[in-house]
Length: 119
Ligand SMILES: [Zn+2]
Ligand SMILES: [Zn+2]
Image 1: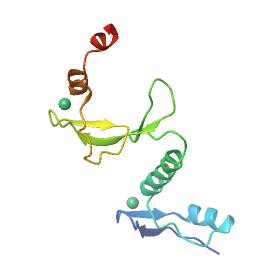
Image 2: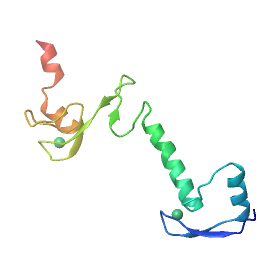
Image 3: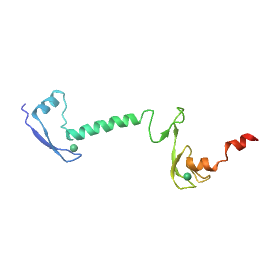
Image 4: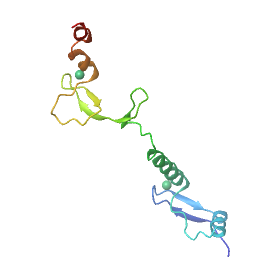
């Protein structure tokens, strides 16, 4: 069976790429009947995005979790500070039952530790 270079347009980006005779032979030798449907760069992109998805299913997922002093990561929820309106992250689900403060306002609003300790 003779192979001839074949032009295929990528199903992802539409780029026309060449499925060479050599590649076709390689595919045939591996028993692969399906022609590639994506250009080499989309194939590479898919492969790397799949591997990063696998990593995301692992233990650490940056962005949703923040770790406190190397302890168990806790899920953080975005919330806006009731005092200054800045976006911040809190380790509980903000339901509006209690005001959420950013770390700056929180340390400003909470009573100074020294006064409590002095009693
Ligand atoms: Zn492509
Ligand atoms: Zn604030």
